[in-house]
Length: 117
Image (tube, rainbow, N blue to C red; front, side, top):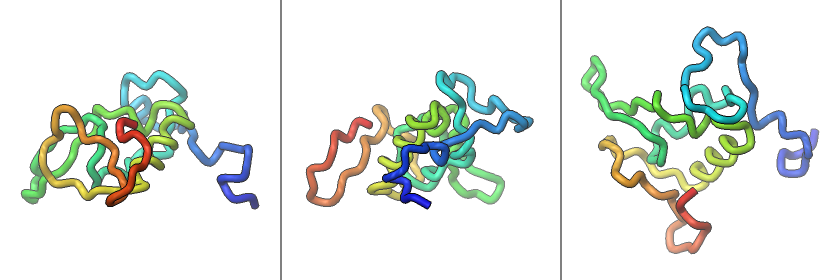
């Protein structure tokens, strides 16, 4: 098996579960629908995707990401988006999203790429 950064086969970056009874669960996806991140790995972290904040039945503050298409819009695009945001994850503050949304985190004291990804 080749390491993922050396293979030309990108099948590991996504799939569409056409048998899912909830598909399409996020309207507005313009490319192939990526089900790989059905439950977004950024749910516990700050991110630029549109989300609402609510209090659940146990009194816990939660994110409602149902309006977000970023982890689903195209296999390559969504894979790249998640990978870039997980490079320097910032725990979610539990507060509503800012306007404009948070920029991509950078390493402490480092230059890094443009944060507007």
